[in-house]
Image (cartoon, rainbow, N blue to C red; front, side, top):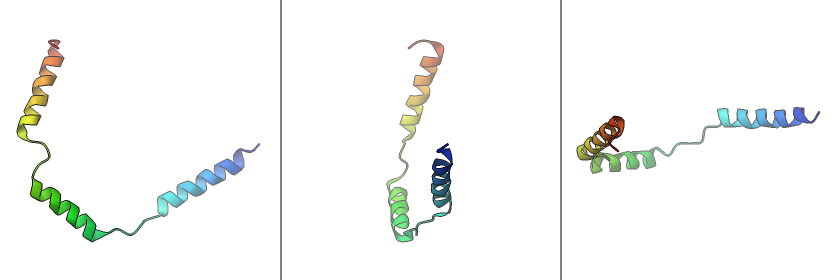
Length: 63
């Protein structure tokens, strides 16, 4: 019989999460994006090639 109160609280929390929008710090976001852009790609082409090779070995049962 106590399910009604728990469900009401879950609904209240869900509604708060759905409609709550904190203020976005656009300057901080801009700094973060510009740092990542200046550093280049996180993954080099060599890393991608290595992953492809490992998958080929695994898929053929050689590993």
